[in-house]
Every structure is written in C-alpha cells, then in structure tokens.
Image 1: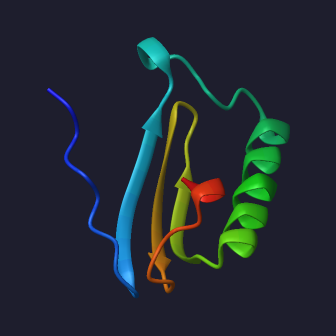
Image 2: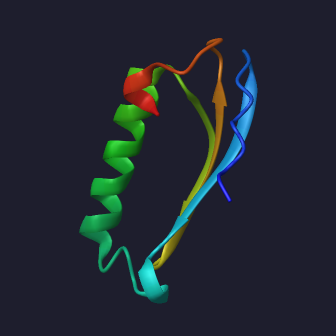
Length: 77
C-alpha cells in the first residue's frame, strides 16, 4: 500500500524519524553522530527548514522540523 502524500503548507511541522536496519546501530561512535548533525544542520539551512528539536540515538533519530515555505524544494525531499 503506497504512502499518502504529505500535506505541504507554510508553517507545517513534521516529526521525522529513521531507524537502522534490523535494529543495528546506525551511529557507531561520536564521529558518526557529529557528521550526521553537521549534515542535518547544513540541509536545514539550505532548505530553509526550522529545526525545533532533534535527538540522535545509537540506532535511530527523531527530528521536529518546520517548513516555512509553501513547497519543499525538490532537492530537499
């Protein structure tokens, strides 16, 4: 069954998460967590997203992101 299309509107807030395959660790040490955070901050700046909260754990992460633009740029999907 396909996913429903995401509603997009200015000021929309999303809870995004991702887990490692088979509950394996996605972030094996502090360097991988730091690299992920740097990439996350760069993406938020490039896409003009507001990152309200995030947590990075060993095998998954959670993000709370606000999209102030009406449409998310295709390069940020």
